[in-house]
Image 1: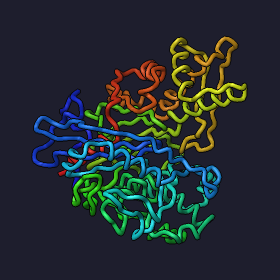
Image 2: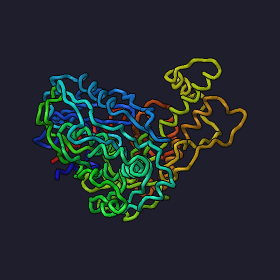
Image 3: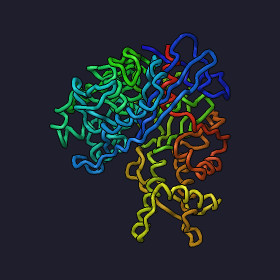
Length: 486
């Protein structure tokens, strides 16, 4: 298998990751793609003797959330047709001349989720683009159909990762119990990024990186194998499990020209969007990465040679994610991030509508941020966990220390923003960051970029210098992995 360079790229100092040396002969133009929860992004990264540079990028909102009647209670599904349409729109917006020079494609996407398809009829090709055909909806990482009682009824995984709702294998178990005929219609499964790689390379058997496999559950990161014996005993359709390969390896080559990208272009095995986001900005092992987008993560590198425990600790708020070259990241991965702010804005809009006022959510967001900027402090305390947490799925949100003088939108928004940061720090405490030698915080993510109040609270709560990297993301990271492949 092909490996990648050291995750921290030690010695690069404070230089921008994109300016890292290209590493001698290799690809000169790479397309990086990220299939996110709410949007798709494509980035063209070029390599020269001086380093890497972002040449062009394009993003499109997918608007793929589905309210189909077939969705389970508390289900969260997305229409794959709309995701691929947004991807095609992104590529169509990039310069044809540069797309024709692409030699490698790196693809990342939202983890944990699962989509099913027919391996010989997964898409239709027309005019250098493909459209999904015999494909299910994507059941996303936000899916809530697997209740705590259902999860406890499943066999215990032989893995360091605790099983949670929204994990691919848990979702398959749910279908097996509640809608077994649904599974009979398909013979392949993977994350949305695995699906795209399979379609581009015409893979009859999906190929998945250990990053995505670990996010599904029932995968042993020590021996790099699925828990097939455990799964077979429970009647799990193990033929749906993809083969697993090393992140940074080549999954195959494009079987057709794709928006001008030549036939035969090398395509990397699909990666986790989280790992690619970290890869795009992490330059030193003494850095911690804070990402607040739809969800939120606080991440540190584990020492060289670290191996995760053999059994999961269901009560632990920290998860160990496979990274590159056998390294691991320690991650406090919260289900509550920008989605909480979005829900708050939607609530304000709904209240206004109930009062006979029509306000667009896009107009509300900047106004509440401006109101919060005028309130430097708030005694309000908001526990913002409206979506629970994987280690505490039944955790609810709460508001306390409510005083009559602090009921304005500004006070509430300030307290909510602070609560999001405090929640992360309760999962991976500041003292632990200090103990492992963290010296700097790298801040990234769309919510952090949009919300100055959130940035203020980060700088107030975390006693480290904070450097914001709004121009780096998973699509860029996926491209960089291809450059650093050997």
